[in-house]
Amino acid sequence: MKIFGVLLLFLVSTTGAAYASGECCQSRSIIDATTSDIAGASNFGLSLQYEYSNMKTIKDGSNGITHDTALENASENWSKMPMKKESFSIPTRMIMQKYSLLGTYSITDRINVLATVPYVINDMYMRKLTRNTMGMDMTMDMKMDTLEGLGDMTLMGIYQIYENNHELPTKKLTGGIGLKAPTGKNDEETDSGTLVHAMMQPGSGSWDPLFLVNYMQTFSPVIFQSNLLYQMTTEGDEGYEFGDKISLDLIGRYQVTDYFYPGLELNGLYAGQDTDYDGKYSRPDVSLLDNTDNTGITSLAITPAIQVKVPKTGCSIDLKFQQPLYQDVRGTQQVVDWRGMAAIMWTF
Image (cartoon, rainbow, N blue to C red; front, top):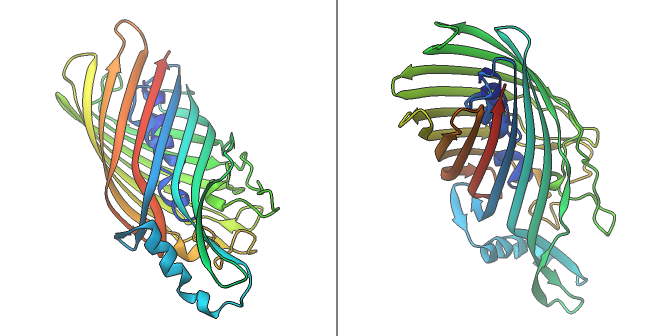
């Protein structure tokens, strides 16, 4: 049980350009792991997690704008362009899916190891504004090819700093240090030979340290947890660096029966601005997404959750639905409208 909780915490906290590098993060699954049953597994735990993120809204700061308005704002400077074919594109919808296999192993009563292996599937729909040789502007909707593959794997060590009772603790403080490895590809290209948007790439190309603090206290029949996760991002091998990320999650769970636990979470996230040192991904004159001025976000979300335990087994199921309450972006970005998560786990 202890191991599985650590694993979920690690997955919850993460995630580029306009939207993904900020709100879509790998650390989301870590946070979920540390607040679930596998965190308390006496030997080892396994979990399979699925995450579906739906994005359609575009925001300028904290204000929502329509897709047409985003295009109109981008085309204001087109009068200065020469009379030749030019284009500018914005995202109209993005769907990000992630399957994560998580495993935890108890080295001692106080030390656990958590590993995550993600597989991502990214789809994006675009709207392109094109100027032909006669100076006429036309819009066209299109879909990018699906981009999928192995994501960046992570490894984290978890240490039980304090617990008031080893068998059935009502108070527990946990710390963790981990590392995200660049196992996912970050150099996928379009048919024209340009790099796909940084936030659409399966991986980041960077080695990122992760730091975790988790506190749990039981006020029977309510269980309260708080999770703080910091991802210190570094420059990737293609010269792109996503902004540092800090997530704070406040989680309450009510024990209705021994097998049914409804809950509610408050999820805060801050993601800093990205930096494209080599300019390989930056095309601010043709794409809203490929502009690091449009990266970085502060957001707050609410997440109703249900946990169901299978009687007389080490199996449990978690279902969550996340709804943003507040999003303040840097520049103009596409943001998450809602996110659904499901996980099945086993403890041994």
